[in-house]
Structures are given as structure tokens and as C-alpha cells.
Amino acid sequence: SEYRYELENNLEPFKGLLLGLFFISVGSSINFKLFAEHAVLIVGLLTALLIVKFCVVFVLGRWFGLNRSQNMIFAFSLAQAGEFGFVLISFASQNAIYDEFTSGVLLIIVALSMLLTPLLFILNERFIQPKLAVSDSQVEHDEIESEGHPVIIAGYGRFGMVLGRFLNSNGIKSTVIDNNPHNIEYLRKFGYKVFYGDITRPEVLRSAGASEAKVLVIAMGDRAQIDKMVQVSGRFFPHLKLVVRAVDVAHALDLHHKKITSVKQEVFDSAVGLGAEALKHLGYTEHQSHRSSNSFKYFSNQYMAQLQKRYTPDDPHFAMEAHRFSEHLENILMMQQKQSYRSNDCAWDPESLNEEIEKD
Image (tube, rainbow, N blue to C red):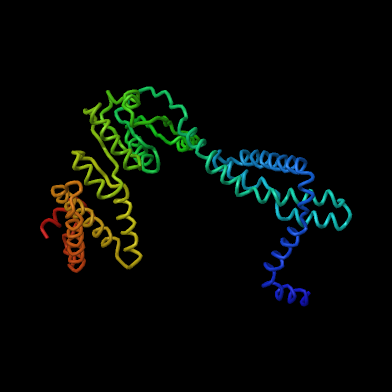
């Protein structure tokens, strides 16, 4: 056993070379004259192999829950014969299980099936996947019946779901609409009542009860769709109060420029909260990290209000102005860290802390 282990280790660097030599020898043994003489038979058997393997793998993919797009890739990638087929055919030929004609035909079929694999992937990517994408986007929309809820939530992904749960826990019922069919299917498995529809269309909004609702929460993650929602709701349902998710600072400023006052940057609070947790791991006390996070939020909101007054779309000097405000915020927070805490420090009370910060 020691000798065998030593031999395997010595051969390890040459395994790739040996494998390459094996496939070269197999390739050189292919009888192209046989292919020319029996092309119809070989092409027929090759087609049968690809179709049968494709169908078997496709059924298995559906059985294990792959969607149509993933399943097509899965089936095309395994439709060909494997490299191990060369080994089996050579073994069968050497042991007189197959005659020379059968072995030759099988070798050609295995080699051609492997050769066709890249072409199958190209066929799938260029012709089949685009059609699947179009058919997915043309899923029939739900018939939305207004239940008289005061709130409509447009977009029920990870952001909208938390928001919806929060409203529901406060006794506020919402009509929830999402435009992602896969997301809808997933949410319904967990008992969520979510309608599928293109919420950017005014008729869909109207059927959802926009004429009677008071608040429209735009919680989608795509900036273009958010902006379109703002435009459509402002034009057809001007009475609705808009509560809008902003994807970043620039988007938040742009929404404020459009007179949307209830705007929240999507990751701001969670990022600051996680930063406060990081401070505690670096030796800050609970009191210090809480005070620092509240100060950061307060000054960020103050500076956002100042930036909104100066913001105009496509202003070439705005980036410099924003950078200056950011540096100013950092300097103020650093100065606060150096100050000693007073006996009346109000870090645990956000409103009192804001008053204290203003005095400082």
C-alpha cells in the first residue's frame, strides 16, 4: 500500500497529460470513412441520444423545482454523452462485447454529441432564453379588486415587506401590488396576499383603489420605475400622499426637487445601525455608540435639508458642494467624540439629544 501511495503521488503531475493523450488516441481511432458510409444512421442515433437525454434531464429538473430558464440550461448542458463513454466503448471493444462496426459508430456518436454542446448552448442563449423571458413578462395580470384600504404599497420585495408588516402591526391594512411574477409566487407560498400587476399604469392604480386611498407607498427598487410611479400618481391621483423609497442620496435629492417630502434612503438607517454595532466591537460603550449614531442621523438630515436648497439637476458644482458638507459632518462628529460627557447628557433620548446638539 505504501508503494502504491508513492506511485500515485509520483504520477499526480502527469495525470492531465495522460488524460489528454487518452482522448487524442480516442480521437485518432475515429473512423471517418465509417461516418461517410453510414451518415444517416449515425445522425439518426445522435439525434435520438440528444433528444432522449434532454427529455430525461428536463423532467428531472422540473421534478427538483428548477424554473424554465434554469431547466433549459441544465438540460442542454447534460444532453450530450460524457467523456466516460470513450472509456466504456474502448473497454467493451477490447473484451469483444462490441464488434468493430458498433464500437466505431458509438465512438463517432459520443464525439459528435460533445462537439455539438457549444452549439446547443448558443441555440439556447440566442433563441430560447429570450422567448422564455418574453413569456414570463407576459404573465396575465391579476384582477385587482379594491378593498377600501387607505394604503397602497407598490413593490413587495425585502423593503416593501418590512414596511407592510410594520403598517399591519399598527392596524393599517394595505393593498399590495408587485410586478415580479417569481416574487409573487414565492410570497403566496407563505400566505401573503399580493397582487400581480404593472403598478406604473394608471388603470392598475385605479383598480387598486387609488381614487379612495390616502397614501401610496412606492417601495420598488428600480429608480426608473420609482420615478415613473411618481409621475403617474402625480398626474392621475394628485390627492395621494406619496411615501417614496430612494435608492441613494442623489435620488433622494431629485425626489425632493420634485416636491416629494416623504422620502427615505433605502439603506441609511440599517447601515448606521450596523455601524453602531461595529463601534461596540471596537470598545465603544452602548451609550457612546447610541449617541454617535443619533448625532450622525441628526446632522445628516440637517445637511440633506441644506443640500436640497442648493440642488439642481445636472449641476456640475453639486458634487463638490456635497463633498464639502460630508467633510464638515465628519469634523463635527470627531469633535463630539473628544468632548467629555456631562451629567445631563441625553444620548438615550433622541429628541433631547437633538436639542443638546443644537446648543453645542
